[in-house]
Length: 429
Ligand SMILES: Cc1cc2nc3c(=O)[nH]c(=O)nc-3n(C[C@H](O)[C@H](O)[C@H](O)COP(=O)(O)OP(=O)(O)OC[C@H]3O[C@@H](n4cnc5c(N)ncnc54)[C@H](O)[C@@H]3O)c2cc1C
Image 1 (cartoon, protein in one colour):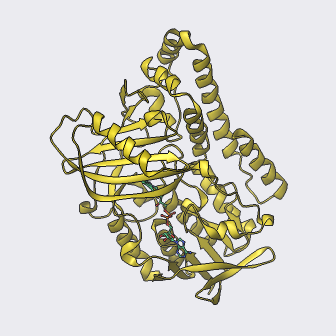
Image 2 (image 1 turned 120 degrees about the horizontal axis):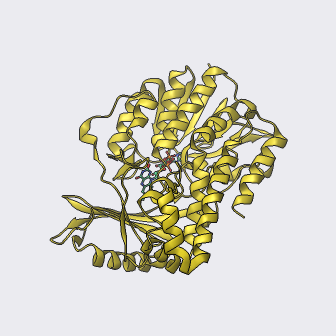
């Protein structure tokens, strides 16, 4: 039986193990952390339809609650836009560790899952991956599935000739997440997302529930302690119900916020989940895409039990056909982050960035410009034509980026792939 090694046992690794095990492969998972330390001790927003899509029943109701809708706040906090609809309207908030237990209950029926075992390196032979080294022992396999996360040392260890694309520090959000006690105080909106919070490159959020206030402070590249303290103080002013006492979490983690990898495959090797940058570049959600991608990988290998890059490429094609819109979201994100805070304020204050534009622009579905909004843009925006033209240009570029992503070559043709990749890279130069 063909042997597959999965590195990492967070959601992407567990779904990969389950799906590939079900497809009849001999699957072994290595996870560096102990079972009770894998995944964060918090909940994440996900689209519940993902469970049906990958062939699972809905998890028990005790694991999740319905998420409330976002309200977006501009840098100077003068305008709050409550966003109804959009692809995230039906999201649920699900506890991460119980979700992992749920996925593990399926994976362990068909795969060997080893916790507290770190993979040291890949066995690389010429143009192929032949297995992994664990505690000094060589373990050979037909395929290594790398779900080790954004800073995968396996991806970066591959020689130049593999042409993998590596993440740069400005393509990562370093995010603090902490749950604070809820105290007496007015709550104007429950789920607030602050774009370019404090005029800085990044976002923050404050989500007030009956029990606590969930705080995220994410900044591009780095997040020193003083910046966390400063942002917390600022969030307290806008959220009087946010108390001093930290009740849960309070640590810093990294999220890739760039377009998906343009090279996820090699002979005997594939990246899935955060290790292939599968998050939505604006908000950093990656749970759903990682689980669906793992399912696509199993479908491709079920159709043809062939571990060459030529066959694995079909998996990347399926991913891009479904999630190519994320390339467009990255265009918008980079533009917003580079845009002076006063220009973002202007766009909010003139109601140009509003319910209609924000609901589609943030998830890659479509940033819509209905006629009434177009007229409003021309009327309200005429005093700052440059900003308006910038926004119009970026919206055009988003569509172009999305179309470029969908043009992914359908077969592994080196020349066509090189041209496709360079077309996408040029969008971000
Ligand atoms: C603050 C924050 C908030 C977020 N909120 C959301 C949200 O609301 N919704 C959403 O969808 N997403 C959210 N995300 C993103 C989401 O967490 C990731 O997209 C998702 O967890 C990626 O899962 P993964 O399995 O691909 O990789 P990871 O979660 O990075 O898992 C990698 C695993 O590999 C293991 N590993 C690494 N190296 C080795 C090794 N050498 N040997 C063995 N094992 C190894 C690690 O221990 C880890 O368990 C958030 C992220 C952060 C940081």
